[in-house]
Length: 362
Image (cartoon, rainbow, N blue to C red; front, side):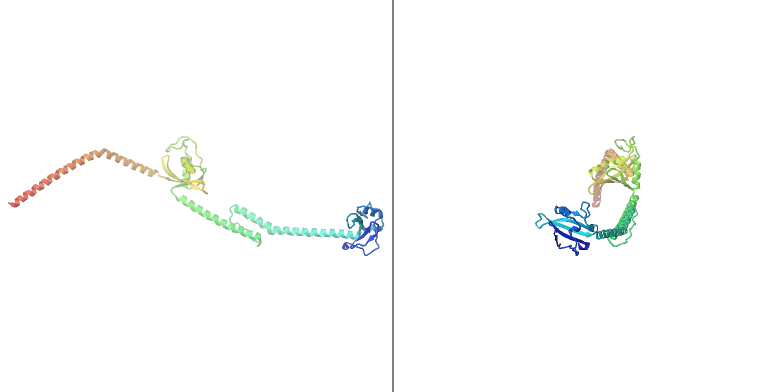
């Protein structure tokens, strides 16, 4: 209170001053009557708080223009009734100086706060916002296929560590994409060099991957007008065209069976004048059939040769069955002739041996 040039007067209900333990003015010449009238103190004793600058207060001496005074009631020790009035007064000039000081303090604090906010915003812009924006641009470029994009590392804090991790992720992603591209080209080269047709379908029957031979089959077979009940040994009846990127009609029953039964199946397809050997196997993804791979081979020549072989064997068997009785009779006659000649030869040999013995005795 002394630092604010505030002093205190204590007046009892019988208008007697009491020494205050703190805030006592060194100049003892001031009394309550210098600031308030008895009528004003009566109001304080009644429980009100009054100010010497309040218009409702009775006019006093000229000190009221130099000092600001406030009178408040205070209770006795048992807090059951008002024991007197507490008058606090202060030079008006001191109050004005305090207000001016507070205003200057507010101005200084505001300027310092503005400068600190500006500095912090600049710090955020250079240390956090710009690196994050660079990472965002780099991520957009990587998503568009520019896997060699990297972000500059300008600090060693958490943002710098994040940038290093981002660059390392970009390098690993680039290496992975290169490896996948290499494997894809390797697989494409193998498929192109195969004489068999290889076609991969998804679970809905759409073409995913094929080699040139398979692509030719898909285009040729889907351009044929199949009958509504399906192909019949190469017959061309009026019907609907199959979409160019879906399972051709001759392969549809085998495809549906492989999807539903989840097992490999083989078949021979007769399309026009050609015969195709078909092998279909399911493709799995976490124990779920996600598609089918089909391998096809043109076995028209093998089929023709096999048919010729079977026809030849059938003809030979037929001729053998037809001519076997004649062969059997001829063989039996020759066997009988041989037996007869053999017996005659034995008799002639015996007679010759007998004649030779007679000659020798004579």
